[in-house]
Image (cartoon, rainbow, N blue to C red; front, side, top):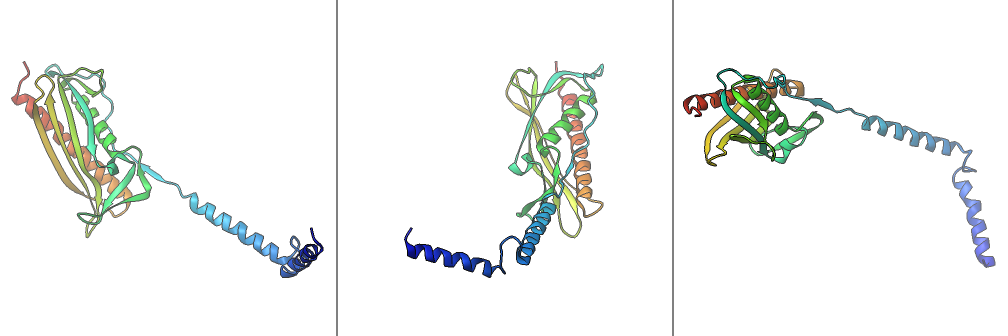
Length: 229
């Protein structure tokens, strides 16, 4: 290091403490800065600790292998529901109009809606005892008819009065012939008892239970008018 460089460094070191009031560690200024930094950390920590709330649909008890004496001698295979990516995730969806959708950040479903609705339908079909067997469709499961569907709406409808919309379509295919032999379309706006998220969840749950019972009833009518030999 040259003498000129050493003198410049010495002059810089002498000036720095003066800018902070005399010293780095013991000055009142540093105490204030430290307090501000700690307070900012505490406040940011409080904001990040907001808990999420999770909701789920009412699922009928698992009836197991319940079969009525006059049950239709067929095995039904229930497939997944095709749907938008919004209903394959866990966030609760709301709609402000025909084209605008949004999601809640801290209000969520315990499982994606498409999976919850499939489970409710599966349990309801089993609990009816009207069929020899009802299974989730997998590659290693044999059956006579396959049911699949499309979930179009499962959301809060905002406006003058709050409601919960469910739009769902199911179809059934004969696995022997490959023909689609039954389909049923359902859409309904269920009024909510309030404007908060729990009220919307309760309305969506009620709507799904209504839809599933309608589907099961329609399916029973099909097999009553098309006896399986």
